Image 1 (cartoon, rainbow, N blue to C red):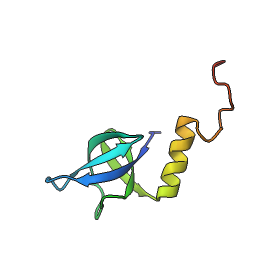
Image 2: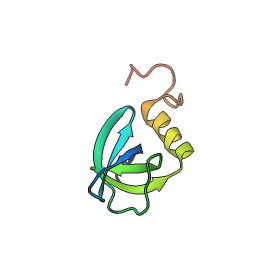
Image 3: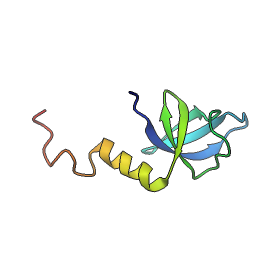
Length: 81
């Protein structure tokens, strides 16, 4: 199993297989060569620097909320872990 983190494409680079993707405010250059037709504003799942799948914005934001704990899935106190 791998963990893909949702990110938003913010800029396409000169090289056709590269784009800048923002994840929680951090921007990284990733390889988008596995996906066709991406444009700024699209959301993708990123794993090891590669965009593996296009996802809907609503799904991407829900996933980020879960991973960061903003959805309340971990309760109000995670210090006892």
